[in-house]
Amino acid sequence: MAMHSSGEYSSGEYSSGEYDTGRGRHRNQRRSTRWLGAALVCAVSVGGVAAALTLHTNTTRSDAAVCPLPGVRLRVAATPEIATIVRSLAKSLAVASCTSVRVQVSAISAASVVAGLGRRATGPDVWIPDSSLWLAHLRTRKAAPAISHGSLVRSPVVLAIATSAARTLGPAPSFRRLIDTATTARPVVLGVGDASRSAAALVTLADFSATFAHDSTALGNFAALLRTMTAVPGGNPAILPPHPADGSAVAIATTEHAVWAVDDAAGAKTYTAIYPPAPGPTLDYPFVTLTHGVAIDRAARALLAKLVGAAAAQAFSRHGFRSTAGTAGAALVHSPGVDATFSAAVGSPDAAQVDAVLRTLAVVSQPSRLLALIDVSGSMSTPVPGATGSTRIEIARTAAAEVLGMLPADTVAGLWRFSADLTPVSDYQQLVGLGALDDAQRGQLGAAISRLQAVPNGGTGLYDSIFAAVTTVRRHFDPKRVNSVVVVTDGKDEADAAHAIALPSLLAALKAESTSTRPVKVVAVAYGPDSDPVALRSISEASGGILYTSANPRDLPAIMRNVIGRRLCRASC
Image (cartoon, rainbow, N blue to C red):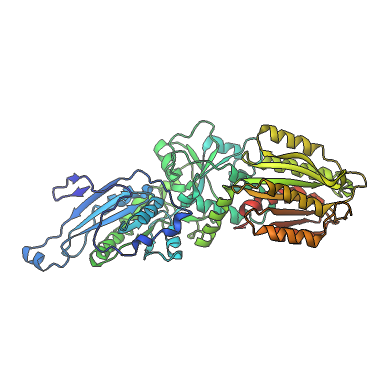
């Protein structure tokens, strides 16, 4: 909207995501976001609100005759939760020159600005995204100059959950308590939607990965939590729905400010913020200039000075933001759903960490097609010390059943067992063929797992069983899935002359296929002190897979959770 000397306002000239051609545009602007084709394209813009104001300095006719800068329009794209405050503060902008300035502020998500810049030759002059992560990525990809002039405010990244649901996590809800629900009958759902469009979601996932990367149990549960990911209600995690659904157990990756905003409007503790282990990362709302020139730079500097002044600090604090040092004001202190004492770090994950998270999400989005190959040789009947009389096969059954519960419905799974001479022609036997993991398939797999027993005096036909399993998975290879064989064994190969394949031949075959258009990875678990980790490592590496070792059989359940977790976040942890 335009402000005239009378104080009246007229409507703005452009809407969210659309920018007119103006002076001072950098000719390389078109290249600024090509890299985002894989991670940030198809961004959905938040409904834009545009406003403009015109400020005229007191110039005489003779002044105007010599004024080299007759006027400038400063276009500002601000993330929606901060745009109204920026627009209000910009109303009193003053530029000490003969220039008349018209400031336009649009409320638009960072992802939408990035996508808009990729489609058009021009864009905003000033950009206030929610996080410097967007800018860091542009710089990493050598995009057109985007200069950050520092942060305006900060807000810690949190998970917002309906207060009624938060009570189920105990008196002190935490990230760890939340992920521990992932394999229970009542899991908390992770609400992030398309994380490539949300800095809060990216930062949250990066923090989860960094916090639990070295804890196999938590990592496995985190993998299960990732599979619960659902679209954020309302589509914008920075603006929470004012009324969460009754009984909703969706933990939305968002900011402390978003929780404050809903609770403040309701006058009640509608949402509870779940904080990461302190000090936690924040969104930093940087002031970024995208286009340059004498007039544009002068107007941008004047706006920046206004946004970092004392009046701005008070305005941001009143609206639930923290200072650039992470200090909480009175509005946050008196808000019941947030913790103003939480130590907010001034930093956020760097571009490399975010790239790793995006790769992780790409893997998460690609469903699995896996064949489990379980050793039932005689040694699997060995009692496990310290396991209250349980045998190796009993622990293996427990671990396999737990993993089955972690697999999402879009998985294709099957189960074989192997020993020696299980059939007249093979050391392996199919128990459940590969199939979509619907209720019927899940039931068949659960029943087959419960019946697994060690074969008395049974040998270990390891190499030929792995070769046959890989061949079977490759026969009906699905390019839209991660195709793999997961083998769990406590012994060494005992080659049966009738069925065996030598290790060199197996490795040669796996290496030849690992770079083909139908790769099948072997994920091997060397289970117990009698296993052969050297051979299994060579097998997994030849196929592009990975080896896990467990000298103590009691560790198998945790290792199997780790197998699932590492399948998802191997790129980042």
